[in-house]
Image (tube, rainbow, N blue to C red):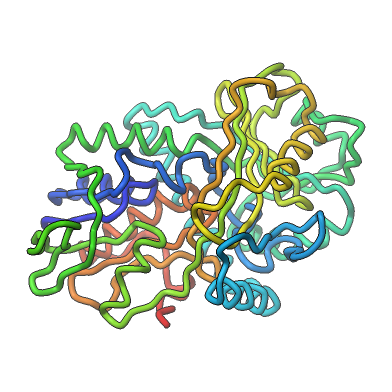
Length: 411
């Protein structure tokens, strides 16, 4: 089949890889001038497990605080009625229980296996590191995390509750002066450089025959014939199928068919700094459960990621949120990163549905497929979602069960 993919972030690139691997003729259409320039650019880099990832699913972490200096979600400039409605749905679902949590974690575990398999097969060095610690400042943090931990156990994930001394042995750079009530060790977890993985995979797929059309914006979709209409062109480009992998741009293309996805962009922040002192820096990744901030070693850099902001895509960086990232890094790994020069601050959108699960599968419109809405778990879910969509296009049953994700969520 001749297939168009809209979007060249981590979801689009992995989807292109899997469809091309199945023998399809694949074209990737991307409005930016390179792969992984939006949500994948400086993401946290956390792979499975996905449930303890900050802002992964409603109810899987301490409830978001909306007001005050310690707020974990912010209503920024440009937020509107749709954002408020989305946040209300998010909080309502958080009170209902785990929802698609177990199904999402199983997809994440499947995706991790697929990511590592691809990296091994093609010798992709994407600065991967094994293991993760969830740092608990108080016993209340431990209590708030129990729903996520139970879902992890239900999904067969190894979970080890350890004390502060054991955590210090696993991450010797942890500051002993910062209060630590204990930690959750996830020995099977992994992290890596999302953008680097996407770029390496893009290079390989492009060399293998996948066509990437950068600087190309899809204005609308066509069903007669199946295809896309590009900005500045009057007639559609014909394809046998189209897969939407473009976040909020995907949602914008659907209303013409009477389809609406209740997605919004939850903007997050990261700072990436050069490694200063190995023994004072994280060896893998940690998550401050209370602050909903991750700190990850990526090769010779340290990346701190967190924050949740509803509002305009082009809003200026929120200085207090960035200050909280720096403060959390200094709490746990003082002196581990060089913060005087070479620091990159980034704000990016994470396209999410209120229940936190992505949409993977047929849209109901002939020839139109969806692989979008992965939120903070984009990297963690990408390879598994891509393999699943390729199987569905080929009319095969995916190796992972997608039924628990609640696929039919069109408004």
